[in-house]
Length: 377
Image (tube, rainbow, N blue to C red):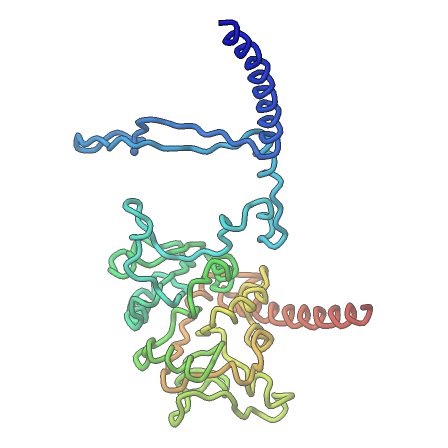
């Protein structure tokens, strides 16, 4: 009896000391790691909304892991300078810098939205008067081509009578040009999903044009910027863009004496017109930055396209075997306003020439400023 009491008295101090040491050790271990709290929610319904057709959602168990105040403070300290501007405080894995023009459903699982992703983007700047011609044009393009219409007359609902129009993308702004639309709605990060971007006028005859064959030839001849050949006997056109009957593609031509300072420069080479250009994704990323916000007609842009690919005289060309006809219908010109007694069409043409001169001056000044800055360095 005495021995038993003695042993129990010796055991109690050991137990107390062990408990104290364990508590101290646990404290130091605890402060050495971020504190994470675990919340368990039982029987949380899978659907937050009311059940449909009397069916009830199967009950599930969810675990939400939440951080303590100190851990949350660390999250807000994220800063990734290589993220896109404005997204530096986001973790890189959640940043989506590019998008697309794929049309998606309002129901179902997102991964099942698209049966097929278009590879190419085709845009037309249109008025209702050219609906029949645009219908003929669009029918030359397969499901691999996403159709996008820029409406300069504000009339969009009438196009619903065409079946393909229901899956096309429609953007409307009255009395605006295709380069105004392109600058605002075709940012390179928006159209990054498409291998080639067609930016076409509405008055093109396409009876002799096959879109799939055109893409094949562009890839075969490694063209970053191109256009279909133009019927040489219809309307006015540059020598470079006239169709040649004996070739698939051409990249050079001869112009009037004195027109080309270098045989590799426009309009003898590295040149397409702005009525029906086709850009690779990479070329468009450069060209988009070349378009000026206020110079809406795009005159002079064709002479500057060579700055966006290299070597330009090899990367820019005309596809002869897939050719089109420029019908020369000045429907957009009629959208202009009269100025000082001048007709709307003439006023638009005067504005176009003014813009061309302004663009040339800006480009020269930009070159000079760059050279001067390099000299200071």
